[in-house]
Length: 235
Image (tube, rainbow, N blue to C red; front, side, top):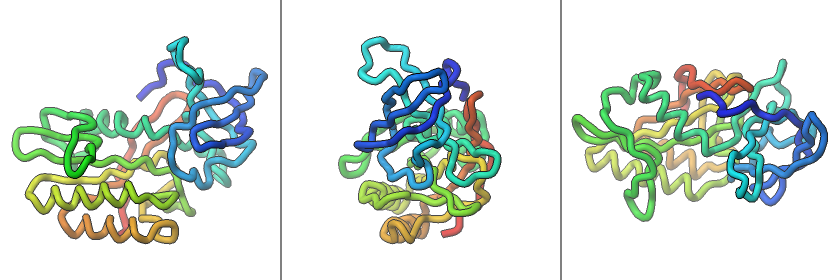
């Protein structure tokens, strides 16, 4: 995925009210950007960190800028982390269509945000020629050493997603969760049991029910973002 226009560099002043971030642009001035991330962003919201913003094309949008990337805390040489969760689904869909996720090849149609379960929507529904596969996508930004972890905050919604996928798998349809590790310095994935042990339990129960647990790395930078390779998932 290439950016529609060059990203604007700056330094994070602060993140607040979850969805807002003040950024001092390299060219001068402080702007308020939309932060499309509901998590804690542990390790990714240190004031003074280098960040990259995209600029909205619509002149009527309330906030003209969106926070896309941040240079992660403590990384050598600067590892860019993609914090905009809205990018994860299109990135995984693009990778599936390009055949870069072989575990999810062979489908003729991808539908997005399809209702299923109990007042839930599946991120990606892969259809044809046989039974469909329901795919939940999780944008993963937290890393401890070289291990990426999810979630970075307690998530009742995330546990519900795992329960819904487990029901799909037990009913005979395909089900998968893809942890998009949106940084290039992780070598493996594991659930963040120290942050939300109930989510880890739900993930392992879903895997036991037949849900595929896939982790794929992504390399992000000023030029764009690409899904790279599968990472081992240690449950």
